[in-house]
Amino acid sequence: MVLQELLGIELPVIQAPMAGVQDSALTIAVSNAGGLGSLPCAMLSPDQILCELRAISAHARGPYNLNFFCHRPASYDEVRELAWRRRLQPYYREFGIDPSSIAPAQGREPFNRAALELVEAFRPPVLSFHFGLPEESLLARVKASGAKILASATTLSEALWLESRGVDAIIAQGLEAGGHRGMFLDASLSGAAPFVGQLDSQVGTMTLVRQLVRRLSLPVIAAGGIADASSVAAAIALGAAGVQAGTAYLLCPEAKTSALHRAALASDAAANTAITNLFTGRPARAIVNRLMRELGPRDTSLPDFPLPAGALAPLRSAAQNRQSADFTPLWCGQNLPGCQSVPAAEITRGLAAGLKQA
Ligand SMILES: Cc1cc2nc3c(=O)[nH]c(=O)nc-3n(C[C@H](O)[C@H](O)[C@H](O)COP(=O)(O)O)c2cc1C
Image (cartoon, rainbow, N blue to C red; front, side, top):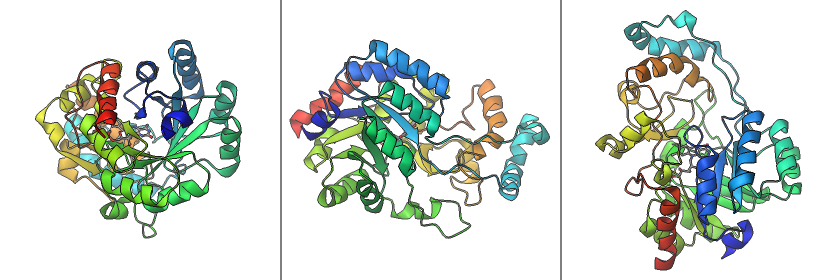
């Protein structure tokens, strides 16, 4: 009951925030089903967050979670940008794209003062952070707002770092997880692309949960491959206080997953995922598509997160216009069977059934 009491929820089931594939409709559906619905804010402007918060306040009966990225802002490196564009040159030619017409890559704001002001005004019950934590002064004000704080760890060292900074619970994100890995303690050699060199030492969800449960006094939330009642039962048996599931919700009618992404998830191709940094510069798990197959899933000389997306954008939209996801990031975890086209409340109840089996 630790997690339910901490977060004020009926079921210790958290719907993973998933930037780009959902809005408040999914958050509300899961919160109303007794789980913790999440709203990913990483790709939203403060005005968009405000609009979503108003919808959640109007329609959610239970607590909800606002999720932010805490990456280091990108610094532009012309050598890396040009090298990346050179690798994409054959594709620009194929699609008749003039590389000089491509807009400069845009950075993305991590959690900042504008986001903090929204938090202070709306007082969301829970905040979760990916890629570390906000700087100390911002974090202190988030805590003072009364929000409970969750953060992702992909290793024991990251979890201990988060615990020492006073988070309320840790999301143990195992290697099976879809989307971006929350890695934030970078041990790469200088000059190498951040985090890529550390992928070999990342561990699966069950191992990570066990490592964290043994060392931390905080509740541990298992994430990665949690797709059905049996995987929930296994995570709880290993000591997790709750679970966070993302991929399982991707085909729900309340998600905004694109038609191309839905088709890929429902196809045999979804059984073949890999960790790639090609789409944003940071490692993330996606269904293997043409770009990943032809270039290889990882490149150690890419521009900073999320700048590689800029040079890819025209290819992505040109291919999508031809109904092709060859250049689209098809984020997806390794455990697909629980990902079904049914309402989010049904997915939430199906996962929660595992609590009785544990
Ligand atoms: C499509 C997609 C988008 C994601 N976006 C985010 C995000 O915006 N913020 C975040 O903290 N985690 C994000 N994640 C990672 C999830 O929080 C979680 O770790 C992962 O979904 C768990 O693994 P599973 O997909 O096997 O359930 C995303 C995952 C997916 C599949």
